[in-house]
Length: 448
Image (cartoon, rainbow, N blue to C red; front, top):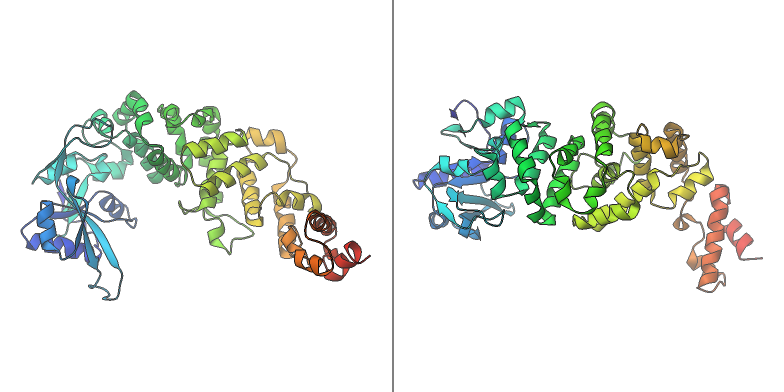
């Protein structure tokens, strides 16, 4: 199927590459995710190009190229975007020859790649119909497998036989769930059945690749769809600690997100809202975003199990630390008094405590939260926290009006005694913030 009526606005460098290849006598199209995203109104992150030109022919058309995957037909064309700005940085665009993949024996890489002059053969090997469309300005959208219809109907469906597609690369099973979460689509019945049948094959995929997909899934607009990982039998194959996540609790998460949380997640009212980078729930690369979502998923697990789970998934250390801390502290009842709250705040920095309050707000209707924190009033807790921040009340050692240098100048020797004095000073000002002055602290704790 060709749809010449639909127009995609191409970046000038991409249009330039297509034009140069066509002028050299070759077919050339953008392909895959950039076509899908353009159709549904999203800004593509990458622009992949496919062509009938062989790798050596691609290289002969452009002045500067890099053999980034030439054994699989991929050449990166390097352009200084002189079309728009002669002073812009060098940029690379992957151009790949139409190909047919041979047998997959390792569940990821074909044993051989056969180049083909047929666009249809190239599209036939791709994972899902919504990712198997091509486009150029002459022919419009080339949709041979019903990708547009599946986009309209909200369906994730394999190209051809789903068992073949998943045997070629087992990660595609997890990608099906991830796309469903990102797009709020449903996985069609034959595709879902194939996932259940071949779920064990996911255990052969590297943890780095698995983590990348889980990350995108849980940071998507519909994190509750992680339930499909359990429904389809994939959870048993991810890693040992992942098995400890309670599927019944995941079902509660699904229900809770669907009914109560969506607006809260994307329109948070944080004390630190002026610092968007502190907690950006719309940004999959933001540590706070990942950590709070993993913490929500892992409620009820032991702190060490959360750490082990994220370590097995090859997560970064910042996400591991914050997610496990949030799980540990979410079930701790925060006192509704300034001193008690500040003692809890000392377990983390102020921005992380802000995130903890928001996580508690999200979890407050879940049974596991009600059991441990039934008396908490999140609204009043947030009001108290805001007062502490607005008044700049001391919470941490660094907030003291007197530090280690001042104590040494006053004659205190560096060592345990100095640390003990600082601890006593801090305990004092936690109870009475007005005591946080140089004159008071030195006169009471040093100049006796």
